[in-house]
View (cartoon, rainbow, N blue to C red):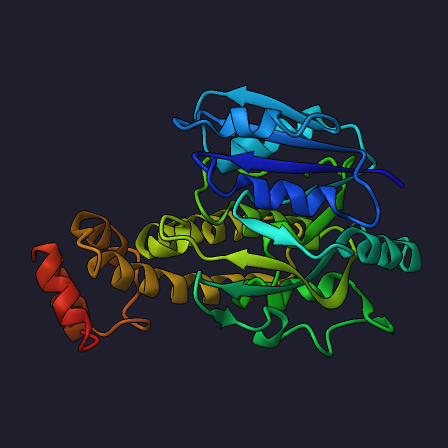
Length: 312
């Protein structure tokens, strides 16, 4: 089995080396490491080229992380693709243990592992798996490796336990393409699409460290929640959904719409909040709160952020 590592990069010259070195140190060597520089304005591409083979550097005009990953997919030649974000890093045996899970469960088309989330100073989340929903959902367990069928789709709806840097997926899947019109939630959208169609496997080990950067997407929750809404609106039209799955998607969509209104408001994105309010039903938000949010949507950003401390 061969694996191509795809690393999208935008203005990450100062930390790109950490991610690349973690891929180069793997106990199972990657077939290739493809770094897609997405129109960086710093010297990220120059830093990437210093590594030499098996690192390949591809430069494109800025089009977003989804487009950069898709470019890497188009260029890759390995049997498997392992994604690695430029600000994350892998444990040295990450690929080896994922290959072992793939060999144990050959029906699995995607293999993911657990993740630690940390800031520069401290651990923010000890385990993504600890969020719940995975344990007990497996249809077969063998040591640290587990196999899941379509029933994994429902736990992934609530909150994805799968981050992009934790995924190794078969390259030839016809649906393997990140939606480029979705920002920040494009990976979640893809994993949900694949979970409806293929078995997944997991490795119950924290083999990825996700580093929380000041400029990453979690700091822009209003936009992120609005894109979550897009994902679920499109997913609700998926013909493969069962009645129970569609009902779960609709319920989660209602919840995320309310969240999108709130997070848009506290970031001063009033116009966006007003647009979302039109889609929120009275069963999900009463008229009093709806009117309050509508009025607040015209307030200046500093005032809204101050009010948000009291959870308006």
